[in-house]
Image (cartoon, rainbow, N blue to C red; front, side, top):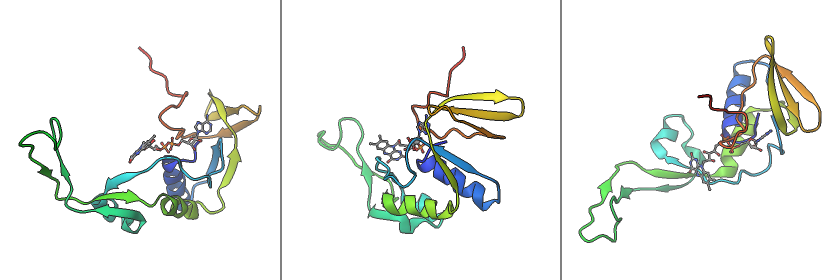
Length: 148
Ligand SMILES: Cc1cc2nc3c(=O)[nH]c(=O)nc-3n(C[C@H](O)[C@H](O)[C@H](O)COP(=O)(O)OP(=O)(O)OC[C@H]3O[C@@H](n4cnc5c(N)ncnc54)[C@H](O)[C@@H]3O)c2cc1C
């Protein structure tokens, strides 16, 4: 469930493993992502994905306390480059790995366990059934509850 970076990363990996995957999201997976993503460049290099950076900052430093305007502020050097994802390229690279993925454009309203199957109930009234449902609907997911 979802069409953000988490959903596309997970779906693309599962497809590459030969598993049967269906996807469900409230909008088209081709719709541009609204957020900007930054990451330490070395993390992407270790995954062979450095070409997905749109910008790369070298000699990165941090200032603590009141920041660099504080009198005598000392920069802490990271010795790591910081990168900005080329969002469109990142999204396309994941979608390319999800070729032939079956997408339902639906908004999930509830998730119900029925024996060994999980049902996703959508606002359209449709039900989708799967052995495992992965909720990648973002940090505001209504499907995560805290029990005391
Ligand atoms: C301005 C901004 C800047 C950010 N910058 C960074 C950054 O630099 N680095 C970083 O790591 N993180 C950053 N974040 C955090 C960012 O939100 C997450 O890292 C990232 O988007 C999480 O990806 P996700 O796939 O889990 O969720 P999301 O990107 O939120 O995707 C959720 C998906 O689920 C779908 N969905 C939601 N509810 C339902 C439903 N009920 N039924 C069906 N589909 C549903 C949505 O349509 C969407 O496709 C930033 C966030 C914001 C707002």
